[in-house]
Length: 273
Figure: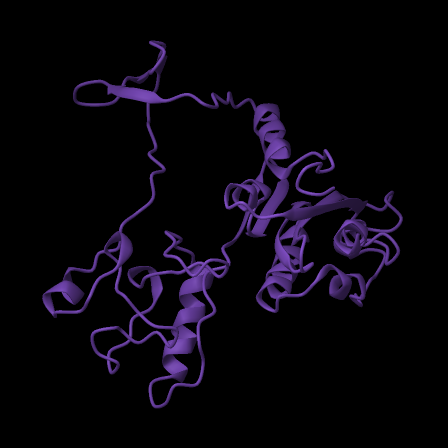
């Protein structure tokens, strides 16, 4: 399960594709739209390979750029993606008496410290609390963007926090992966029970958690928040193995099969070796 020989497991992305397909959605991965067709209204799209697909609506998910003309006109220094440059206290680089937070403020990765184009309400509210607390004296510092996401697709929840396996490998990190799955009730035959899948990514040298993903029932939305807390406190696989969880037959997985703990257990041995 090291970087060179990771255990093969169903990734949450694969589960998402399966759910979308089951809902009657056709996925065209690795396909590029060359042109949007139509005059007064859209009639379809032409793909790079020449195929044309009819469409009544086209949605462009291409991200956003902050609207910071007010800051620019005021002489405030801008950073990446037209965002306002701020320090860890949310003070602008130009004037420490002026604060900026939310989507207009520059985000930096929790892992690399480099600018990152993430716009999330959870980060914006965290920055607002930090800025508000620091108005009279610098008290709180922002740790950087961890990037925590969750969604529901065809009745199943999918969530991710921190680095994905692909991003970690892209950055040349030596990683260990631990996976586990268990029903979110015990026993599994209880009403509304869902199978929960967890994948955790750790740094091989230190055992520190870098990221995690969860898919399952609605509890996945809060489980990913637990993993976000583990990441921000730089917990190791051994720390998570010792995790003490509150359990109830109708609310959680069994304490002997709790997937976050069991995924950390499976990663611990390769980390120690």
